[in-house]
Length: 424
Image (cartoon, rainbow, N blue to C red; front, top):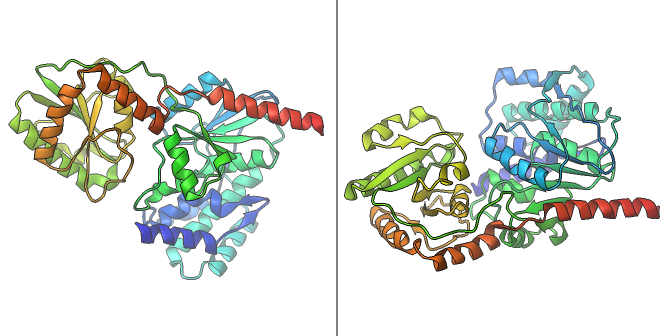
């Protein structure tokens, strides 16, 4: 992974390009990384991308308004995070799922992209160059389109994720016009021991400020070199009740949270461990929640063999709120923290591919024996109030549990900007 991340950094440095005040290589960081990591593959039909742009329609807004955006991620859990922030500081939304791509033929932009990528991208494979040239053309077309916008400006702009392509353009559009910009944290951000593509979350912060969940992320990013003033601890974007002691039911039900597709082999290993534990303890039931990137067909045989069932649809919070599940099992996922915040212990699998994120408690396992031991220990610990007070303290530091400073930060910055205008 480290070699691939360095390849991504090398690509960015070679093909850096400023177009109308927009740093195109920063805007396209996710795209460049996807190519460098081998995630994005060349397809002939991808060349049609030379003829696309995106049209953004801004709502009617004023200088006292806050404007939000949501990228075209199509994730219900992402909308839940953004909706919480909008409840604290109401504002209009630009949903990129409703602002689609449009056909644009700009031969000059196509030639600019091809000349730049092929002249500066020495050592980059031909197919990678073509994919990059397509992306550069799309961004230039997109910039041309958004710069035609003459709508009134908001007092502040909050993107869901300014590191991603389409929201990055909007963020820089407002920065050029001296509008304060923010972006949200949508998973546990930390310094990865082995830099995956997710390391872009701290390598490429485009917004003026990142609204962090907890002090843990702030400390991690400062250690990396992100200026402290760019990082604001705003709290986890969600409402949770105080954590309470749990009673253990005779029939113990565990929700197994499978990780994303890149960890498919690890998922299979976890399923085998959990199956062995289930055979040793007939009072344990197992339901499985699939990550959105997984295909059920890849796991159907394993589920049938081990007698596992898929859980009903829903977010982690909604699945855990009625106490149906006594524990969860997780791997390389923010779901680990979501589970604890929902008053449910989460045991997490540890192996050579573990991401190295911070523990809430000593709840890791790597074998049938250690998982059995952890289930026995935590099924007793979770019956005490003292245990859950310790969990709350850890979650406050790691995730900003029950901290809420979104309105305070956004409104304060708007006031500062208005005062600057008055002084001028």
